[in-house]
Amino acid sequence: MLSLFGSRGRLCDSPSRRDLITAGSLPLLGLALPDVLRHEAHAKADAKTNPPAQPGNGFGKAKSVLLLYLQGSPSHIDTWDPKPDAPEGIRGEFKPIATSVTGTRLTEVLPSLARQAHLFTLIRSLGVKPQGLANHGASIYMLMTGAGPLNFSATGLSVPPSRQDLPSVGAVAGRFKPVEPGQLGFVSVCAPIQEGSVTGVGQSAGILGATHDPFQMYQDPQRRLNVESLILPPDVTLGRMKARLDLRSVRSSFASRDGFDAHYDTAFALLGSATTAQAFRLEDETPQVRDRYGRTRWGQSCLLARRLVEAGTRFVQVNWPAGSDTEPAPGPDGSWDTHRNNFPMLKDWRCPVFDRTASALLEDLDDRGLLETTLVVMVGEFGRSPKIGSPTTNNVGPGGRDHWPSCYTCLVAGGGVRPGQVYGESDRTGAYPQKNPVHPYDLIATLYHALGIDANTLYRDSLDRPRALVEHGGPILGLF
Image 1 (cartoon, rainbow, N blue to C red):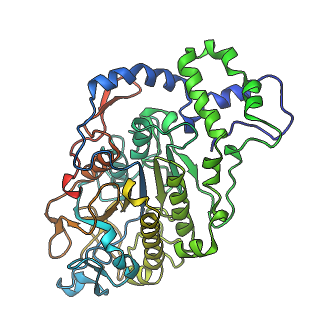
Image 2 (image 1 turned 135 degrees about the vertical axis):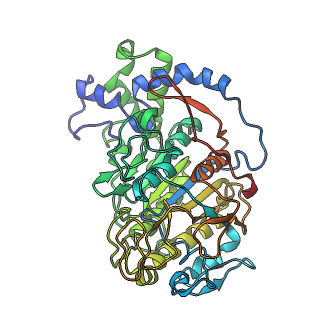
Image 3 (image 1 turned 30 degrees about the horizontal axis):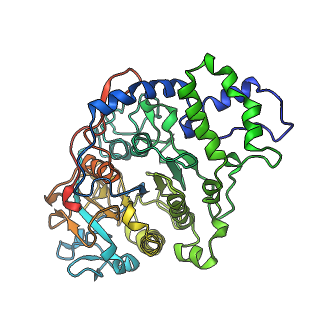
């Protein structure tokens, strides 16, 4: 987390070496000085290389994005895309139910979302062939970055993140749609992305530099959040803090005055913004609202995400609290990776928690007039196998479903997307897209499109090489 301060001790009259190093490497605020110079040098070149896309078809309708990432991946057949006419070993135990949209059905474990179907659209034809085996890591990386992982092994398992990774979608959003001073560009809450012992897969800004890394808040929001790093000490004014560091006196060692001062002004604007720090005060919400979202880690994190959007945050990512390949277990924070006991886990734990919170979030955003300008995306890294209890590449136990990247479903709402649709179609067993196939890169391009970022934009990596925002594909204009 951001920290402009060391201990809460005596205020010094001049900056220490630690002060300068800390203040000179603030990734949250775009303050890594080598990145400042590089990005400013390329800003004009980027504008010439990538002229703004023409408005229309939903371009630029969204001011913010809420990505609810269901790491571990729920079974699409048992939630969003019921197959009641499929053979017994495929259709599963749950019955389809009607929704608020005629002709659209969910399964019985999502009753609250079924009543909100007029607010969202389902994409039922997502599919991908990940690098290597159908493990979580490669699919996560592709979903989060819009490109294939060049350094993953043939197993498709994650490797530790590095600055050579391509930037996550949130980092790109913060880079190309910068927020006003005093606001946050990219925030990640609830829990880190995790596969096995590897944390942070596809989450950082990678080659864009620490400037655009997310502000990470993984404290349990069921308790009061500690945001000291966003608040000045009680005995320090903003002016006194500036005098303490006296950054302008050392700017010649790092950068030109214009770039240096502009980025540090952003840092001080954030410290001086009561709105940003206030967004983390969930205790300001009424008990009724907090109950409505659910008193779970997931529920309160989604409520926090709504507050961050209200405070002007560009991109908020809420990661499901359990890691992608965690053994499924009872409890509100358990895994979606249901290799065994898929049906009791979904019925008793995963779906009640998710259904309550997701429906509350959509309704709340709509009631507050925020849904029109907030693109909401709910998705896992893949689906789960149509055939129950039959292993494809992984160990599957009784009543379990394996990994299935070939076909899955995504929920999208707001941000210019026309609600009440079903885009695309899977085949009769939910195994493969049958109509309007969508690649995860298309989904990412659509997200950029909604924010007003041309998916054909090129940027430059740390070696000054041009890179595309997505490896291939384009926005799904039929959604708008």
